[in-house]
Length: 250
Length: 97
Image (cartoon, rainbow over all chains, first blue to last red; front, side, top):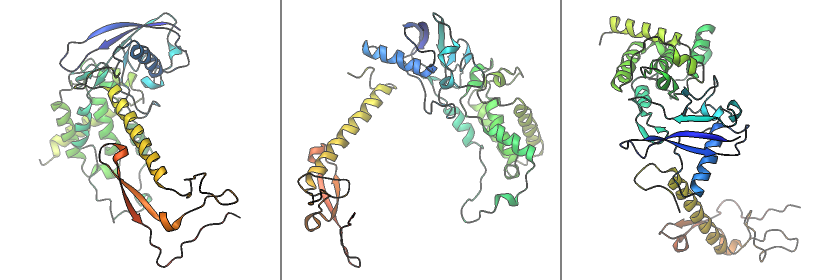
């Protein structure tokens, strides 16, 4: 299949950036979107031009690196897939495809399609963990009984890969789905309840500090999330945060 | 020719750097193989084999582990020998018969 690609090119974080048009021929419908980008980059390098910079790692939908806004949708037209899992057969021969990076004030563009998502790392450092001395005092995991529905919901929340599609697709660039998934995966479990209040307060505080927008319950995040993270997590974090601000000592 | 500049994010430069590293490592491997003038384990030299065509070790001269010190160019790496001393166990050669 032959395609026209309109790709965001930006030299560095201070440059202006613009959409540039590229033609690509002979793309296999069975290839993935990133394999198509590799083909484009090979063509560009052979012509002595700069290849398009984009994030990628596992190329199998689990690392959260790949992050392209394709035809106005995070990770493209398919549901429950990441960019690396999107196949070219989802597009038509002769189609024009717009490719942009994640757009958010909290995700500054580094180059072309690569954005700086370290804001997520700083939110995690603010409280997305359980502080336990894990050496010399481990006990049988089954000694702590946990209700199956809580375990299931915690597991579902834990499937968040931190790609940032939720932020990119949100009209407010809010990170609520991501932060609430990371809070929920621990809040639902007894081990996470010990530090639940400070976790909710500090993670939300850091989230706001990074410049993410506020949640207006639109729900686009849940639709575009490649892992199908539920909006219920946002509701849960709102409860955690409210209860923490009322009852916390600090 | 590597596209792009040095003072910006440049994945082609990253890849070129990795290729350069592998080439240097390859050169050092070859230097090490030439220095070890015996056959030992997976390191086999045609000029050092038994009548049956098995590896012929030279424990008198080569019972050491080679550690190469980096000085810049692989060809200028300095060899440090960590001698293998067998005190309580006898150094023997395995027979595959």
